Length: 155
View 1 (cartoon, rainbow, N blue to C red):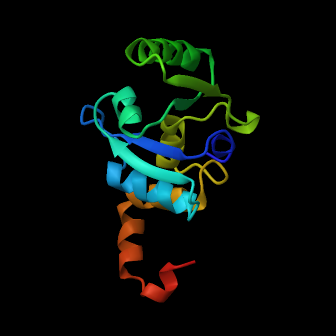
View 2: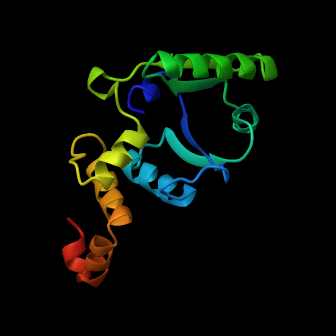
């Protein structure tokens, strides 16, 4: 996001609402986490959508889709998607961005598996996301936080 915002006037972080996928966090939870990470940046919006990304982009008057690519396997899939999107909407460009080297191997699946096995995910995701993952995966932690006084929760 930090690198993408330098390329565009307005960045919309679009979260697909896909009922066919069983995500760990709901669309609303993911949007809340992204909003918390984004903070009050006036050039960044967080939205969800159903259906085709090109249709959502048209509704938002967007002319660029920015996608991250970690490996060759990502490239093959993303290339197919970019070409199909170009077929559906020729005026919509796709820009591929490579991650910082220290994140090139990461995926949400790997982070989730590491967290499920009680491995440290510190530095791999924002601290707030790390905490929410722990709460989601360990009901005892969620119960403990629910019982804490409000003043101890913030921090």
